[in-house]
Amino acid sequence: MRSFSLQAAVAGLLVAFVGFASSFAVVLQGLIAVGASQVEAASGLMALSIAMGLCAIVLSLARRQPISVAWSTPGAALLAASGVPEGGFPAAVGAFLVCGVLLVLAGTWKPLGRWVAAIPAPIANAMLAGVLLGLCLAPARALAALPLQGLAIFAAWAVTARLKRVLAVPAAVAVAVLMIALDPATVPLPAASIFPQPILVWPEFRPAAIVGIGLPLFLVTMASQNIPGMAVLQVNGYRPEPGPLFRATGLFSLLGAPFGGHAVNLAAITAAMCAGVDAHPDRGRRYWAAVVAGVGYVVFGLLAGAATAFVAAAPPVLIEAVAGLALVGAFAGAMLGAMSELRDREAAAVTFLVTASGISFFGIGGAFWGLLAGGAMLALSRWRP
Image (tube, rainbow, N blue to C red):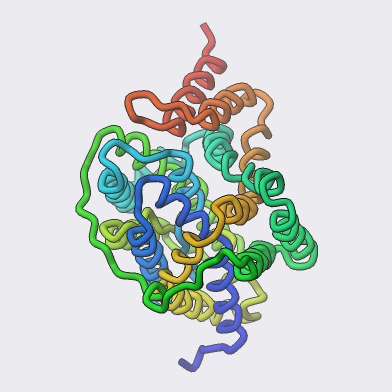
């Protein structure tokens, strides 16, 4: 405790608030989209929050480094675009378990991690952009459906982003809460709904769900969260071995999956908040920011029932708008990465369009087919007779 720092602790509390408030709506949208009931979605949100909090605490204390852990926000957006698989939510949980196993393998068997890292960045980014497009259109739909509320939420997000970008989405959430609370049609939340009930879901392993949800979830989590998360740590002077970190996030994903959690991984944006100089001038004391953030995530997880009940009581278009605003930055970054290479631009465009189309063959969603189509187009463009 002699290395404990109040400055790092305050940074950790900010990380926990920003990490939870900025994307819990995306997570709930994703879980409900693949067949979870309100109670199961609350259980999944609780499982994810507790799993990522405990994982961050264990890794940060063990290594004395600010190992920040988060749920897979791009993975949740993937779920929102996937739809209910054959077999319902139990089939989705089976896919979550497969994703967890693959994350453990990526940290244990080095060739798998290298193969994922070898996926061309334009293709991976284009698939992610296609997954995010549907939710990123939600703020515009909210403006059309509920102009006053939609404009207030958008204005709060835009103005706060100009002043302090990391607080933009929490500000939009706060305005949405105010709008919904002032609506006379909103039913007060019962006290019993504040605390979630852990719901154990018996998994079903359906090939279509594994290929259409589990495999893309693993690829998105690795390409857009774990690998950038390692890069953030390295930029700030930390050099942990990636394998054990990937393996740990995979193990905690496996623990959370039976209760409805899709995946946890290394954080990227909040990792920069924990590992940067704002957490503490002394690099050796910044790990307390990640530890305190982990404690905060556990506390927020125990209140996941209130968040889920609030989302269920609100107009869906407003919740989708908040979720969409939370993903605008990720969408912009993915599009920039997808189109940055001139020679790969057509393949990236094919990947993006096929993924965003939402097509489904044999029960397998568009993310897999977009990756397949883009990969084939890339191979064709580089082939020389």
